[in-house]
Image (tube, rainbow, N blue to C red):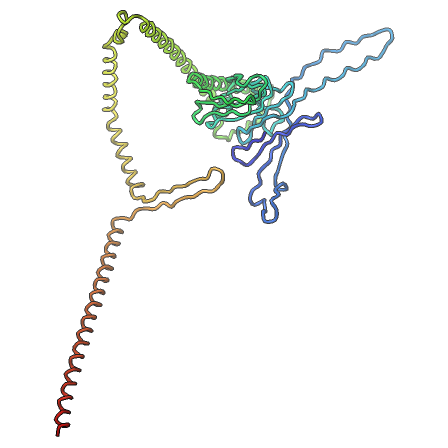
Length: 460
């Protein structure tokens, strides 16, 4: 199993064990273009940096009972007890990057099977454990919306777990998940994916079946409620941890005569103790509101089911004993009154917001006139999906009225000059034609005169 990091700069791969050794995970860093010279060779192994993550599960330390020395008559030396062999973690089966610094991994060891571990290269032990399956997990995938984690196991089970928002003090993955055996007990899950709208899930297994399931609205509501509850619990835990830390500081201040000055927190995003309490209270209120909404939804569902049952009972009766649909209305005028009250409130709100709406509309019109009406072509950039290339257009403004008037006047002058030039060329051609015709007539007249003078001389 391999997985790219979200920024496509690192690749993590699961390496199986051999000769009784456990497997490991290797992370490769993609080389930059400056580090690779493809003019001589395409071998980039020398410029690829890698590091190994050896999975090591945190084992609780159990204190051994005190040894009781036994004295016997023979004073024989007691044999040393063998040290317990540490459990083997197994071989990595699936891995997946979730952030730029953390990743998920599953193992097939006796104590690690069926658990999704969230790890980082900064710590040798997992930072979070998510018990999901009861068989080796062979598939890990995140939905397109980054809100659900899908996992599949070797015994045909498919699990969907919600992903909370990555807050500093809240859990990223929910503690509970949806789990179902869809492909039998002995068939491994080959693939699973959620739709783009998170309303359908497709799974395929080695049993040769491909299943398409619809995700109900109740499941999405339950995921939302679970996210709110987990966030509230995480906020409360953070607030308690802050209070415990403050109490420890007070005890240290009492026990130590000279207390060193605490360092200032320079991180602007860090919560203060008061902010932590406020945030915890706000999360508690949100969780309480969501809980009340859930109760109202349950009551509405019960009433709807009861009403549908009454409609079914009425439809089963003979036509003469059935009630008309209008008779099921307890108060026919109640709907009219409610609609009239709602319309009055809408009209009152419209009148109250008329001035503000007109102000916003005029402001928007002025902004469009200032920034958009004079734009002929906006700045548009197209990014490639699988490469860092991009194509962009230039932001071009329209010509101002003065510029258009000057351009039209220049075009008018050019047209007038071209018309004058054509007129002059036509007039010169006419004058040339007239001059040529006049010279031809004069030549003919002179020839006739010369012929008349020669005739009488020749006669005499």
